[in-house]
Length: 66
Image 1 (cartoon, rainbow, N blue to C red):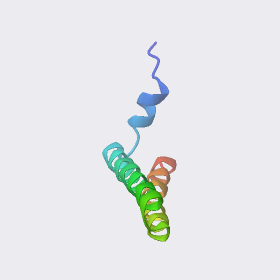
Image 2: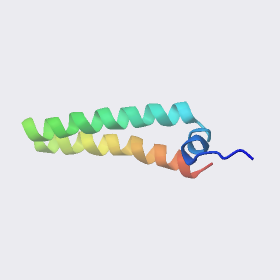
Image 3: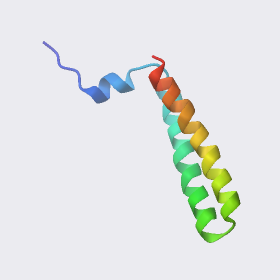
């Protein structure tokens, strides 16, 4: 009897490479957005963070639609 971990079952779903790239884009965008927000223009920082969040929403949608 073979027991599969949750992590392996999750990563073996549909589009794992695409989901990883979308997560990377989200993380970089969020860090850049927070940096812009704290060091410069707060409105531009919020726009960058919201744009990064759109990538996360797409990634979550891909995860939910198996």
